Amino acid sequence: MGGWDERVIASSFSKHRFGRPTHVAQELQVDVEAVLMGLRSRLPMEIGYGLTVLSMLSMPLHDGKAPNLPIEPLTEVYLEVLDLIAESTLGDGGIAEWLAAHTSPASAAPSRSSVSREAVERMTYAELEQLGSDIEYTVEDENSCAGEDNKRQTDIIFAGLNIIRNFSMLPENHAHMARVELFNVLAAVTDKALMRMPGEPVDSSRPYSVLEYARVCRDAVSILANLGGSFDLRQMPKPSVLAIIHLLASFLVSAWQVLQKREPGYGPSIPVSVRDVPPATILSIDRALEGFCRLTLPDHNREVVASIVPSEELVELFESLVKLFPLSAREAEALRTIDDYLARVELIALSVYSLAFLAPQHARQGMRTTAGATAVMTRLVYALAPQAADLKTSRYGILVRRVAETLGVLNGTVNPGGNADRMSFSAGGVDGKGWRFASDAVEPGWLAYDADRVLEAMGWGRGDGRSWRVDGPTFAELDGLWSA
Image 1 (cartoon, rainbow, N blue to C red):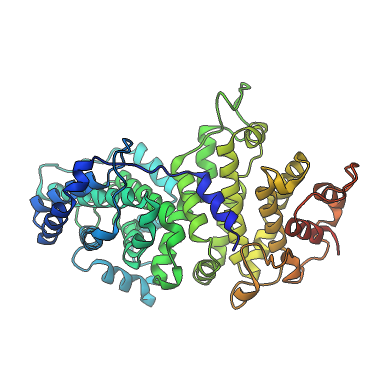
Image 2 (cartoon, rainbow, N blue to C red):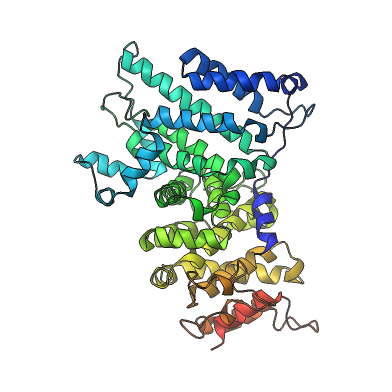
């Protein structure tokens, strides 16, 4: 698996390492025992004390006076926080009951009689946020016992997720935090069934308002963005994997529509430099993109996703991600002048590649025939490949290579299931060979109609005594797209 791909993801949204006051670290041993006992007591005052102390210990500070707090000595406390979140969200049945409900055959069919509740299950994150901002529905009596219990319930959930998110910022904590227990909690607490719609009564079975649900989803996605590369999906229950992919997809499927509200697809009506006003970005979408990249980086994780997620959902996500590639003149300018924007486009390319790589043949065919997808990706290759004297050292080399490999994967016949030993993240890149050497072409000479531009992107005919200026795998991918 190519190490440079992981570095791309890491550099795209850099993490800061934070310090903490020395006196807090010195008192850690005393606090740990008191916090653990307080959380296990389940007494409201003791829970409040424990969560407050953990929030202080995990809080990211910038003074640099002391090293970051490791999670390893706090493993018992960490697991207790996960249990507390699950209990506050799901009740006494906890994760076990949630998994049982989503594993049973009956869960495959809609279990609610209400049409409105079924519609909620299909809503994207953007639609739910819009609903929350358009409708004021907090009409319940805040002095009622139900209202007080619900507020206490959601406060515990928010505080627990905030603590986990803070700890997950430290890379040294990742291996210790990426556990099945956390993965199940993130899948369960973001279940749309836990959200009440306008007019529905407050009760413990639906603790979230629409805006509260949006907040829980954002926290969960941030944690996945930090820890995604450390999860092994082969060890995770299938309902949890499907729920997490649905969570990330709910952000990404609606990403283009959300971004269009911030900035029209062809840029603002008044010309403005991207250095003065960069293209619109939304942190929650970028974090979901990073989380999906990290989670689907290992080949074994891709195989699990391919075996669980329905093909039509893979195609839908592919279509949505292709829309995020730069199209307008402003976006093209930003790609060449703003490093953060280039990193974002690289993450889009990595995500699209992972989807094409893991998709079964019939889903891959749907991706190949997606209107405009081939044109958008080849446009990137044609535009960026000639920009450098040598693509191997170009700042666009990673992006061009990944897009070229994605096109090769879409036109390939090998599936990941059962062929993992023949495949790698470099599209079958063994000894510099590209994807077409690992599988047959679905359509030989797929891009032969545009052979001149493909050859130009490969470096042919630049007239300085060198024929080709791309690395071996990129050469093989591009060569396989036009030559039959």
